[in-house]
Amino acid sequence: MHYRQLGDTDLIVSRICFGCWQLSPRFWGDVDLEPWRAAIRAALDCGVNFIDTADAYGDGYAETELGNFLATEKLRDRFVLATKFYWNFETEDRYPDTSYDYILRACEASLRRLKTDHIDLYQIHAWDPLTRPEEVAAALHRLKKEGKVRWFGVSNLNVEQMRAYGRYFEISCLQPLYNLLDRQVEAEELPYCQTERIGVITYSTLARGLLSGKYSRDHVFQDSRANNPRFQGERFARILDRLEETRPIAESYGLDIPQLAVRWVLTHPAVTSAIVGVKEPSHITGVAPAADGELSQKDWHTLAGIVRDT
Image 1 (cartoon, rainbow, N blue to C red):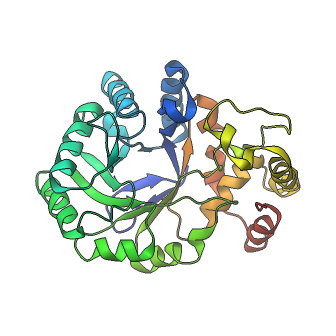
Image 2: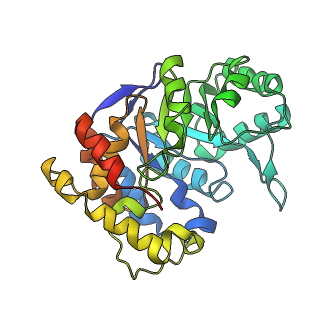
């Protein structure tokens, strides 16, 4: 496993990050926790030291299960722990909230669920147009002064939004959607992060499993992907066909297709770590070899030309 410094922080993180979104029943249905717990142990065996979650995943469920496991196994200090805030789910209908008071309450709740006294990377899950950046910053500065949060990050923000926050607090990391099919951040966000020395941890690195190479044309999805046009009909079939065209390149590196897709993301110089969603040990052990090297410039561009959405 290779490691990188996250932006200008003192955090040294594995190039593969263990993602916890799969513990969000509204998107993925019920997940068997025993294989998931075994996957955390397997991640450590592979050298993974980075876990990303969010309070919104299952409205606290993912943080609770992660916290319980890390505490029981005494593994908290083995991981750089990242979580997020943004959705206020204190009432039945959740809504965006980055107000001063809510950020403080959200952080305390995350600390309780995670059974820890500090969060290594605390991220704003999305842009909130109703709260002034200086109010957000006031809450974050207080959390850092109290030792409850070490570094701050953002997710799903564009450059102008990062600049707006960056005038009031240091942004150490961006978490964007980035994979072979979703490349919008290459135009502005990734160059900006390189220039400003902001770390980047990508989510949906395998495009919600579409780039995993394990699905056939007739596969019927039973979770939230069932309503996504990418996972239906001819569009789904075309993506699978193009993915199959990448197999010779994968084999030339001694990789399989999902490992190749992850290595493609990690080859971008702005990317610090790639988040991989995990339900069982094979989901993390299977992609770990992707972090052992990079693609050539020629192969990176060739892959980008082959795998595209239509």
